[in-house]
Structures are given as C-alpha cells and as structure tokens.
Image (cartoon, rainbow, N blue to C red; front, side, top):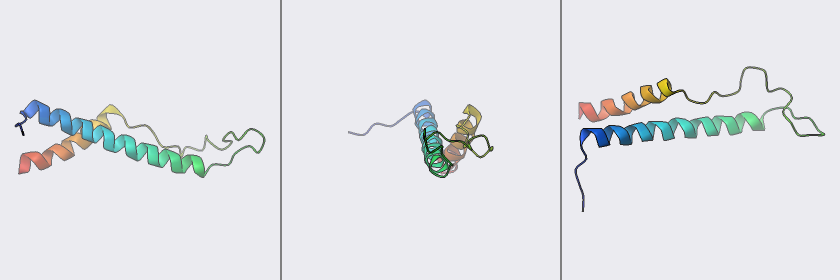
Length: 77
C-alpha cells in the first residue's frame, strides 16, 4: 500500500538523504586521510595530523545547502 507524502514529509526525507550523503562522503574522505598519514612506529598514532588537510565534518549549513539542491529537483518536476 502506498501513501502520498505531504510536503513536510518530503522535505524531512530529503534532509535526511542530504545528511546521509554528506556523512558518507566525510567518512570516506576521513578513511582515506587516516590511511595516508605518517604514523609513529611505536604507538601507531598519527604524527602529521596537523597539516590542515583533515576532512571537516559537514556543518548544518552544508547539509541544508545539499538538501536545497536535492529539493530543487522535486520542485522543478
């Protein structure tokens, strides 16, 4: 049985999709970043982590911007 979603439900779903998309991208970039760092042979801790290249966790504004892009597809159709 399918039900029609109202505008609030559609926007909530799109916001969740945007959040998931950006979080997945962050996790992938963070994994790659961690694998390419120089580590201390004794402790295995990252020793070159303060070089400014570490991926940043997505901000609320980035998530909202991504959701706006996704929602524009719904609005235009």
